[in-house]
Length: 332
Ligand code: KG4
Ligand code: ZN
Image (cartoon, rainbow, N blue to C red; front, top):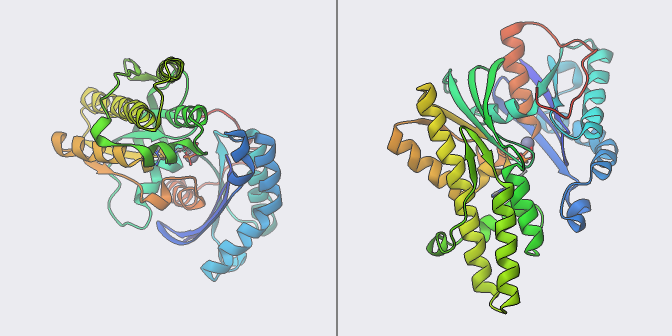
């Protein structure tokens, strides 16, 4: 079964052709360079760019897969959560194709698609139930996943998402966008505990806005004393990153204990972080988890995870979404 997956929830326009879980093509164009000077994604720019490039990205995905639209059995698209204008572009494009060719059509949740990413290009059994962890630019959330359509949110950030905090901090430190990538690169193990920063944890919920403020104030204080330099910058950012990733792993461990589940599936852009991956692997060994991480090319937003999840859900339910389905900025 060939599924076409379309993803436009943020700055990436991505289309993919997937045969069940095997990725045949995955074409992504990002509008990132147009947002860089603002230090964050500007919804209006993202939306206009999706509109400009979506047909090209779709044509290339079909071409690389060496198929025509007639060969596609099923069309899936991200409908939530995300930037509303951006989502509308992808959803209407997908609806148009599905209506024109009378193909089954499914609207899927972007966060759940991130959790499907580790299973792309593998034939391993999906370990249900599992604890899902999504850490991205817009979300930091823990899920109890009984199946991909029986999902309960069990903990989330009460303020900023982890990726958002990486991006905001990077901007204050004059690094590039997306900030997580730059902080990941600067991270130095030897000074990861130099400063004592703390993130908030309330049950299984997170809070990251406090650490952001604490870090910015510390930087200002050091600058006033003229003791801010390249070396201190690395110490500050390494200590900050260590606290963020440790907090994420601590809450994840708590969730696995609370629900007595040993299978853990992770997804989202921040999961590309090297130190976070290292801590997750260490924790998995310590607690005997079966840990599933996405391949690095599938941790960031992509159409393949949308196509994979679409195929999985359609095979299970054997029914399309109604064409009345609408987009939403919210997850639920
Ligand atoms: O999942 P994603 O591509 O888009 C959303 O759904 O939000 O995640 C983007 C986020 C950005 O905030 C970016 O800074 C972060 O992922 N990110 C990273 C790394 N690569 C991307 N954060 C930490 N370390 C990384 N290596
Ligand atoms: Zn995402």
